[in-house]
Length: 220
Image 1 (cartoon, rainbow, N blue to C red):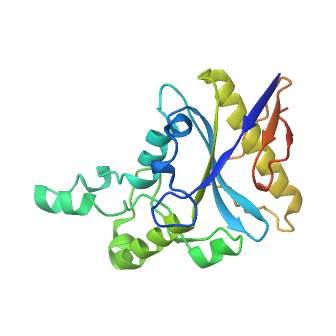
Image 2 (image 1 turned 90 degrees about the vertical axis):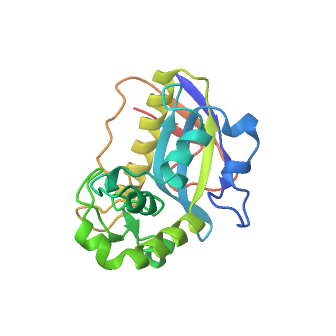
């Protein structure tokens, strides 16, 4: 099966950048479902930091990216009894986000200033010791990050298969380039992706070079 992706972007995720902000982009694009990339501009290409998908169950690009990057979630602060303090804390970047080292990220190296204890499990002692530094790093990260979106018909199985094929392509490309064993992959999809068990080809049309995503991606 062949799937053709037309990538739109790069979009910023905060206002005031040289690229248009995703959250004020053409609704005909961002109010659709499909696959998306978080990228880091690097020399003549964009490094793929994350491959994601959104469908009828998870909402449009606009809704999904708002939830992931702009709308801060407050579950990590539910342990605070006082409602005023809890509300104040909830306005801050959550301590269960991984906070990247932005200068290293600009050089194409994935490194963390802060790591939570696990998914939705904050490392509160570390967070409280360096909160102001982590908040500044998070803002710098959002200013650096760029997003590409590729709308697809809302057929969940095709969206999922396309995401898998793209993650696999980026993963394999980084593995082939790396001189380090084990490989420390730049892409943040943390576990090695499965390979599709059937023929599936993604034709990728992008306005810039996306590292690891070639014009033809063989999904199997």
